[in-house]
Image (tube, rainbow, N blue to C red; front, side, top):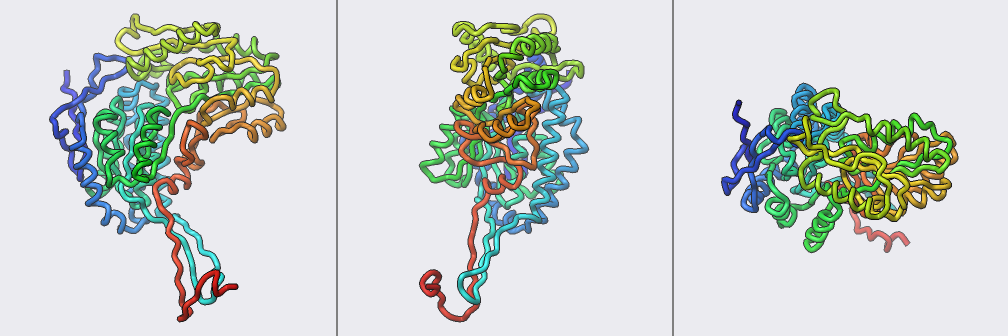
Length: 497
């Protein structure tokens, strides 16, 4: 057996062990016998060093012209393209989802890096005519300073890129703490940036747990913005920690997303979308379609087709190209899914298929759960309202579009929704009335692209968006500039009476 690699923190352009010397293991959730590597188990002292390196690098990085910063990001994107397959396989090994999906994960990082490289030449402000004579005015963006990034395990390269690339192109420096389950993909992303010529200290990484490394990062006085993706419960703690210091805070949190299937829908297409939306990434997406609201006229036919497809899904190690659904990320997540299966049954939901962990034969060494469907669900059941983050889908019958929209909106989250219908009027009504940040017509609730804003309403987020040019607003401040060349004192609003 070859010895598994050891990975340190990345601080000031160097790979360093944790100050404590402690390490943690990263193992394959599909096969716990496979040790992917060991990683620094960081604490407050490591965070302090990383923030200090980011603080020292900030003046030089900010002063580098934005187009030059963009050139570095462009080179990093080119490196990601060349190493896409290698990085995809690493992501499958540490996160578990199938190779087709991790290739998409890495591709999102490529897309975001290219996109933000271009923003080096497009950080547009405003120029407007003044109400005074001989006076010019404009607005420009300023970087916030040091960005503290706390990222989840389900998109181990895409989500770090969503945060890191807009922060960097604006002239911020970065300290990132990846999820303990998936640090290797962040290491790979940083190595691409390092190879592309990113100066030391501009990006720093500390690996470890939330209380040990994440909390000191988000409360550090020199960190100007915290960008967090994860659960709503943890996001609330991040928000509270940032509020006392008036620190900028960007949150992307949970979802209880819905597909609405109307009586005139193309059922073949709707079933395809619901299978992908519900069981893609083993249901471990904030945009997963964990609720399907079905018009009563198509409820039985859709259910039969959907359940048949769910039963036929091949579950296993994501490195096997024939596998369609991989493992759950870890044991606590598997146990959470099992607890929700029991809650649903206790509430009276009908278990149509699945409902059990898979722990025999090829599944014995991993964290696997059957694709699970509950039928005849009441919209107020916990299984219909709360985020499970696993391969569990609730089917809810309704009698009309109005009822579907009311049920769809009746949860604490507002990330993504979809409707399947052939009626353009129904599509536009749902598009207008669903209070979500993302909406799809005749497509599932997953499939966002980097050049539109990503984010949600209600308990899903705090009003900011990732991706597209809206991400620049998260990591920058606006400065309004007035230049008076009249040679006299002009008092706006007073002398303009």
